View 1 (tube, rainbow, N blue to C red):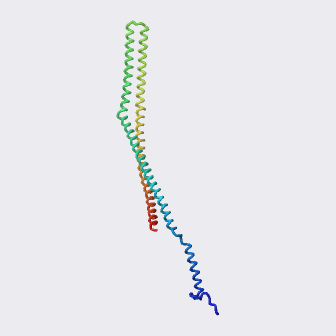
View 2 (view 1 turned 180 degrees about the vertical axis):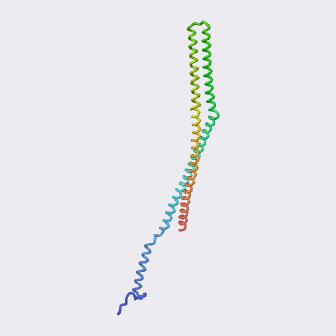
View 3 (view 1 turned 30 degrees about the vertical axis):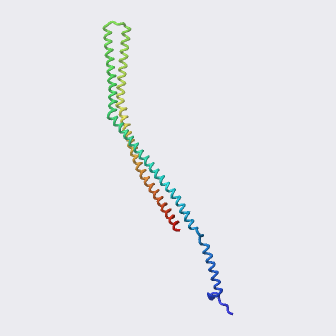
Length: 238
């Protein structure tokens, strides 16, 4: 009996049927091992949806916090502008009051003191001259005469010194004190203007920063919300 090669075996021979059965069994065994366990896919989708739900809650809280912080920052910046504007108005008011009233009052007060000192000096000089003439014409006790004249001369000297001091004060006031006060008030106005400008710029900058930060936070939250909705819909379908 002649033996035929395996390649020429008929597919209907018992040996070929055995080979085909073994091959089919191996293939079915391999695909069964690779397939996921029943329910594993649904469980993974549930975990993903739950995790996204938690992230969504945290994202909502973070967005609310960002909005509150932005409102507070803007409020503080607006208050800074209001305070700076009030300081500027105060500085301007003090400057106007000095230029229109206080300066003239101080000058007039000094002139009044000067006129008073000059008048007292003149009165003291006239009184001394009168006493000297009187004592020369009449006979008085020498001790009384010297006492009265000494006191009058002292009053005259004090009046002259007071007049000189008042004149020096007036010169210092005109040369140094009033110009310095005027300069200080002008510098205070400029400083207040600068602070107001910086506060207004800070407010404008804070508004832009807040707007950008909130826009980003809302965009991130919207993306997370959309992702969570997709996961939820996917879970419902499965």
